[in-house]
Image (cartoon, rainbow, N blue to C red; front, side, top):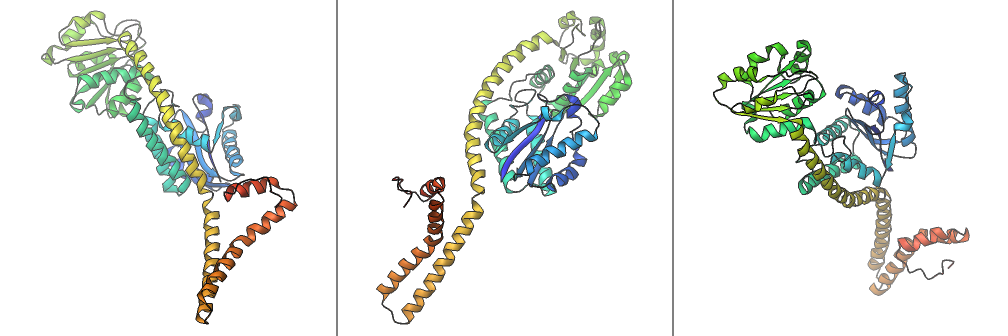
Length: 425
């Protein structure tokens, strides 16, 4: 049985391919059942995010090709011309273990060390458990990966420092406002950066969120995903007094927030501090807004320096994380490989036990018949040795007759014999 990790990610496939092989939470159960029914597939789990789709499986020789064929058919069903085979990567056994651990630690993510992927891997594992497609092998793989991810984050601190502008802005806000759930954030814009900032704010437990955009409908649509409130840009002055945190990122050529507007809007705040983060170029907030009392204004340049320093720190942490992964992956891969020997070991021990019991029963009958105990012991030792070694001896002799020197060498290693160059005997 072989372990495999098969998939595509943001490094190997454009979004046109990734979206074809993206699976929603609702369809994941059906997908897992389809995959588990393929020839050669014993266990299977699917990790599907916006940046990757990966299949982890325990397979026999047919299983790997069956999974590739299934993915290819899925893509062809979408009538796309992109070449999936060029985008696919595949890892087996120890390499699959290393890959799974790297993914869990965030070392294979678009944002180095990001923590969300660990939660997504846990959801993928739980879905496989619920579908009945994850058993002993995948249990060890995922639990081992989760354990390594925890160790890497604890020992290296890889996730402590923000490396995206949106994350850095929210992390800065979190440092200033302790009770996040008691505060309100005003986000100006509705592009990718603002959406990412909204995600980080929601995860950190912000109390209330207002999203303003030139298109009010777009603002309301985005805000609805975070239980927030959407408004148009012209409504901003009426809501400035509510905002403890303001993050702005639009494509406007002129400032959205001017000093007079902010000064008037903050009159009702009674000197409560306000964090303003302007991550737009050109700037959305006039520079002299920073001169107003109780205003802490940061620009994208202020954050970029922090991001550069933090990225360097994460890269150092990632190098240490890879060392941890290498050590842990070696042990886990060895443990998974040893599982292949379990059925053979069990059969061997069962056969040896049966021979022992049969020989012991004969010895007891001999004692009951009055035979001397010394004779019975000799009989037991001689008979048990012959019975245990009969089949291996026959097989080795036949292997020697066929000239199978590798088989003889394996036997010497298996039984711990000194190789004295007399395999022919």
